[in-house]
Length: 416
Image 1 (cartoon, rainbow, N blue to C red):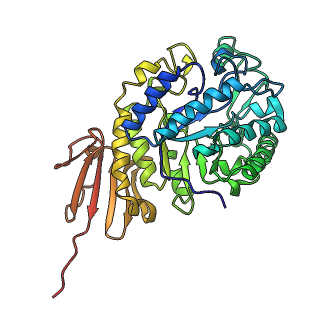
Image 2: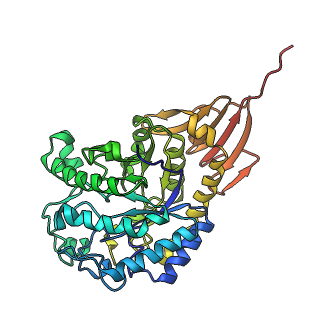
Image 3: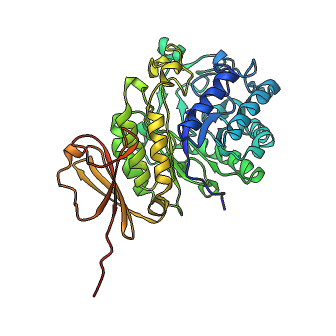
């Protein structure tokens, strides 16, 4: 039986263990997120996404985690463990990704198992959550396109990149009928079997928006949660709610969206989008929430992986959204019975969510994305606690416009 997943709020630092951040910058960011109410950080221990192992952006401790021959860089491991220890000291749980999907095609399963063995040996004492890989099903048209030192920036410039999201294939075929997906799943499945034999820590798996983790390996029962990525497209607004509901999310069936919209990616998905993603996920039954910001995940300077957006690391650190998500997360901690035992109802106008409510017993929590667009007036025959997620505080009056969270509690009726 997989170990349990805590109810966490995580930030996303894919390049957090590389030399793109100094040790001081790493610790300062960790202290900031801790002060804002975050409880976890997801990062890659290994080669980050979108670069080859010889790309300068993959270096940590002066060089990459491993080379294509499977040789492990001790200096990288030492620096990574030191930084992960910093997170643990601050009570930020590390969510350690061991690789990215296509990398298993570069070095094979045995070398990937060797790398995962080293990760477990050096980090298990820190109490991490392990993520088998990022984007388990991600495939490049040319499997060696990023080797040995390219990035997706280079490939886009030369028009060689053709990232093939499997959702384009899955429109015509089911995942189990797709030979490429099946082959990849079998490879990562072997690594999952190895990893689950080596650790009692929770194991999860990250995918593209095309599939869920239950399709990413032949043994999904070894994973501690069903996970998805809704990605960075406005069309995923519908999926933020419905994927969780379709999965029957709840304590017995933990569900996590590991990669919703990043704030600032493609110069989009600002504060109200982040509020929407967080509260809809929570009230639809998700076990945890993962935030990400353009500039933080890639330690951006406006140029590196700039095709995703120009927001820099420095700019992203000034965003007020993390503070507001942290405040909301702390508030929800006092409403745990409703989250864990409740049932979800929602009201839509077409595909546009107007209201989502989680109810348990005589108590319920509602999120209204925009109170001005609610087609039916809210009932006032119950006691209310009104929370303004844009201000991060409880208030006395309903706003006239914008998002609002409302706690309802039925008054007990006396008889006789």
